Length: 160
Image 1: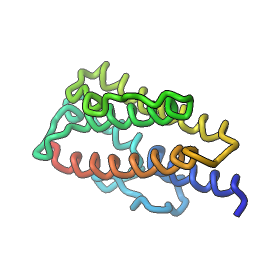
Image 2: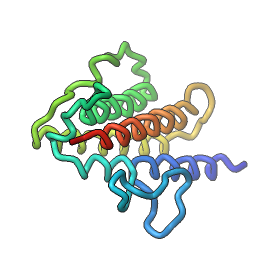
Image 3: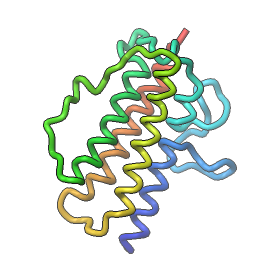
Image 4: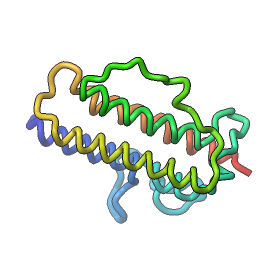
């Protein structure tokens, strides 16, 4: 298989997880509906639909959407740092903070997730040697983003 075709297809799946599917097109794995039954169910649309109060509610699951979003941003930032040669240590436990946010903090956190995702896409574009740790640049963010997207969507179902 052509390595560029593989990378392009991989980016398509990663973008579906975060940006959502392309309207009118079949998706590779999303069911195509938000928790409320309408529209885009990717990470960004899911986060945008929530107020800071909702994002701060830990529900019965114990981890708020804000905490998941902070952790996802941190993970994406670490992926880029790792590729740049920074191998830690990283404060994974602290990466779930803040768990409670005001409206301005929630806006900033959602922007941070988007920026970190854009930085990962840029890093993928710059990568020409896919040996060594480089495949983790693809697989790590995809596995991690899809896990947390699922966890966030389950948490949203429990919001008041």
